[in-house]
Amino acid sequence: MPTKKDDVPDKRRYLSSAARKEEILDAALIEFADRTYNAVSMERLSECAGLSKAGIYAHFNSKEEIFHALLERTTKQLCDFQGWLPDEDLTLPELVDVYIDRLYTTFDSPATISVYRLLLAESARAPALVQHWREDVARGLRERAQLIIQRNIDRGIVRPGVLTEHFFPLALAPALLWLNSSMLSRGNPSIALVQLQDAHRQLLLELLEPR
Figure (cartoon, helix red, strand yellow):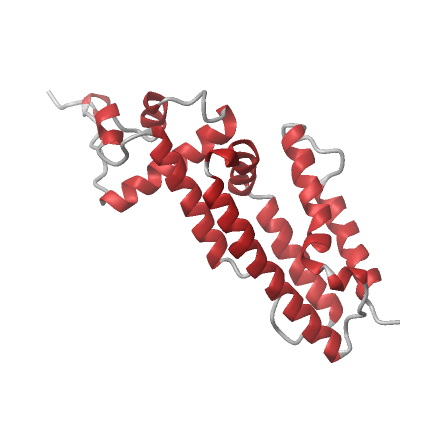
């Protein structure tokens, strides 16, 4: 009698150790962000990663080690990130359009929301990593944004002012507030993303356009 398809046991995919660790970290990101660190067990993480408890311990010695590896991965990704401002000779409307499109594509990502929620809730567990992010990653993004803005001021397409003096935090603020609202309301923010995106674009154009 032929064996039924449902009777055939699933074969576990072969993955390298590095790839398997990435799968574990992907599962951990969701669990830590949704349930908080204290509420997640190694058993739960192994289940979400599709591994036995022994399988997950073959790659990580503890939940704390997984958490630190997850934050280190996030920090590395942010170090590689070059920001949302395009470093090209564009008109002001083109510059703002590219910035807004890149920014909201990032902030509308479930992975971004999970990472942000995790950092807000659990950053005290890894103060050295948080300090590194503030001193190196955030500073690098801020300095790069300022260089691009200054170059466009010199080109005459951007008007200098308070916004250009502190472009990185001030231009980011509306999107960051939307992200906070989305998190607090469990995906039901007070303003729709597309409405905020259009208003944010118009705000930047009005504040940056030369008079």
